[in-house]
Image 1 (cartoon, rainbow, N blue to C red):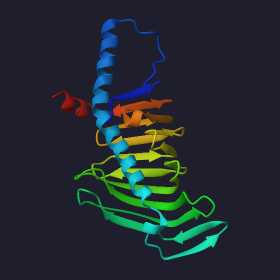
Image 2 (image 1 turned 90 degrees about the vertical axis):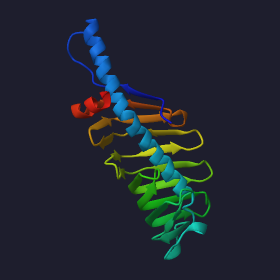
Image 3 (image 1 turned 60 degrees about the horizontal axis):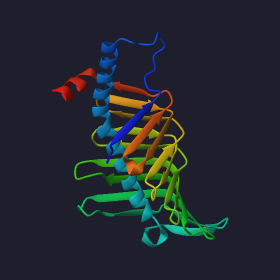
Image 4 (image 1 turned 135 degrees about the horizontal axis):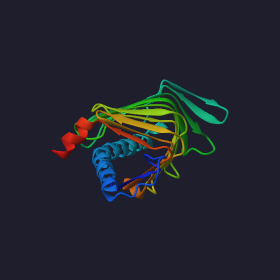
Length: 222
């Protein structure tokens, strides 16, 4: 899925301009090793986000188990909505929220509050999503994660977002707020993230910092 990752402004130096060819080559080599470790991490994260969207698509009144529903301020308010099932690989998934609000005038728009989801990324990886809220527009096929959310995987990956906006049809995701991704052996933090070309290109910008355990680099080199 992921062909290119860009680190705009990553690891800036404050000293004199380096002109020594050997030093430049060494720095490039270290960065390549970091990328070899971080690329699979980022690809898994992207896969998790789009799996989440596929579940949210089904998170509409006709598919939900709900305790009760009322009408408030022009919206259908559903208490404790939940959905569960199995994917094509017969692996179970589930999503629940404290409330789901569907606009009566614009029924394609549904807002979820206090979301908890458990979703398979593949036959071995399970992702857990905890989010304060999200707005799905079925007509535009967009998902606005307008509050902090965390994605945790059973392989040790943890991704913390303050917000994110996904355009599913365009295959794009963007957040202009800080993110932090960590896993066993490495981490990356940045002020913004933009994903384009259906996840093939991911750009991190703004005070980007990549940290990789030297032991992990040695294992990758072997």
